[in-house]
Figure (cartoon, rainbow, N blue to C red):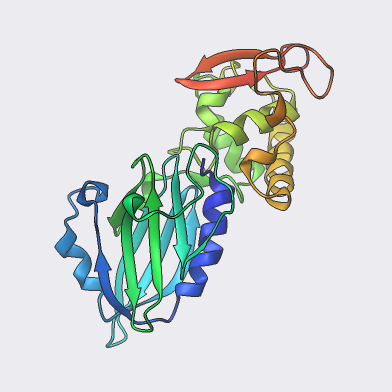
Length: 264
């Protein structure tokens, strides 16, 4: 957390920050600036305005336009496990697992102040996110919310990595986090340990269907923590589909819950 669904909620909230002249940019925590970015570099946005809010995977992208009308830098925001976005004091997500639900000043990492005295703020308890200018969007793979079946097959092709590790590899498929990956594979009936390239055509079609359906369902319910599997991600948890005891493993360093009875 936050995963694709939460960052999409942030993107929608960020639309409220568009077309508002930027008066100041503050970075209380310069460690949060990534890829050589320094606090003074962000001053370039002052006087400009955000004109578009985009998302690719778990990366939020805010396009800027300068006072003379030319394109400015793109502000890239990553939220790690506990990052939150707020505009004018309103948070983009009401509940975020593993994070404080309060926008406390001590967790503030970025503040953009608008000429109307409103603010866009990034708060992050564990400091696992980051701020970039003009991030390399090409580093990310297909967006999980819009990937086609053919693109998904390409993302899996040739990989001997465990299926779960591959679908969480942002270079190949951008957006899935730990909770949504487990939910998708559980619904699709696919073992997280399967070599990614071992899926037959019908299995890839099934995975694609459940990927799109799972994201749609969880978006309507309120986020990545609302999947059917989520309440059983505890010791002694049982499969909501067949009642079999769930397995608890580590794949790619990530906690994984799955049902050996129907995930093959």
